[in-house]
Length: 253
Image (cartoon, rainbow, N blue to C red):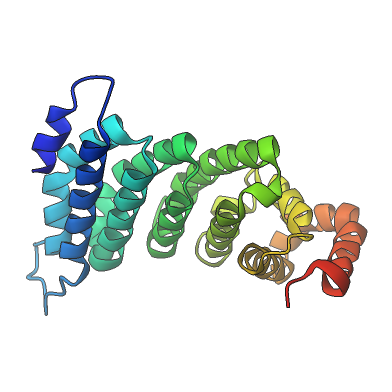
């Protein structure tokens, strides 16, 4: 049905009914794999979720290409990716680059927070694997650039879900793929963004920012000296002022 729905949308105009059906079918596939827990996978075989998603990926990739700008389909696709990674874990590694390419492409188009959530889950599972720093460093740069562009265009108050997901994702980078975030040129800009977010009055984005900053300040030497000390030496007084002002006035109860 998913292939038929995707193949049926051959014109530039796609009806709401088609978009709704595609989102439903992708969500349905995600629900189907969510609870697939084989007792044991025989040696030389892959987790059935990895097999199922791998077989379906050409169709899913076509769906991303045709409908990647639709928020509901993007959320459904990212939910599927999260479930596939959580269930199959290491067996999902052959699909990782394709899934992350679809995720970053969708985020550039939709700015959907679900894309950042999917990157965070992937970092948690694969961030410490061989080559993880290089792979996820590139992904961090891609999504950071798109996030910064969206936030700069309309202000931090307009994107609470993106800010929450971005700093939750960055926190997972600090835990599971330190070399993918600290040396990256976007890391100082992420710190600047965290400073700009301190006056926020919504609980979830502010919590994510503070948890991220707390983890950054716990960075051990020599990583702290190499990648964080200069920013805090320059912006530390502003950070302290922002935190104190938030506690005294704007921070939600």
